[in-house]
Length: 269
Image: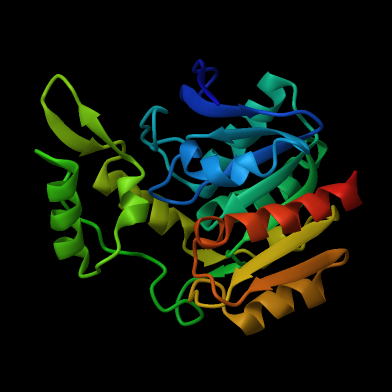
């Protein structure tokens, strides 16, 4: 597992990415809002025997550059640029949450770099009323604290939720300042979420490559009826449900996700 950097180029920001290694089919992992490539570490361990696994920090996240633009097409163009620059296309692209929307938009607008899709708990309707809370209001949330534990406490208080582990995966210790801080800006994350809100049926139905949809049984981000409609309306698309998992299926059941993806990789070649 190595953190690498792709320099900025013709409007694309400098993009950091995790090279998990492995051999075989190129597999690009796209995280969701607030994430970073390294969140897939446990999942990648179950996949490197079957694929060459790469996971970028998308613009505004992790160690990649912040930018002025966080529109849907910005993320799509970055992913296409990364695959071409690394010579990895056509790749199987797995995207979680907003990364899932990027994945199927990439397949529609840049079909030459996508061999197949794995969509983790994301759908073509990212809006109300289909999704109760498509945007989490994170304005004014704490950016740093003296310790990781204190940062977690402050975020939990601001969020009104006990489990903030997903956010903390993007927290690092700033040795110069002696504080823990996030690798993203909360206002940027508002822009990312707002850019992901919408209706994307044309993009979901616009590609013809094989696709696998993964749904967490406890998640509210991909309702069961919407997941079934995604499969029914698109050829060569299959659904795997994880009844005991929430929105972050790769965290809740990494072995199960690895098994489902491995079987899919065998099928698509």
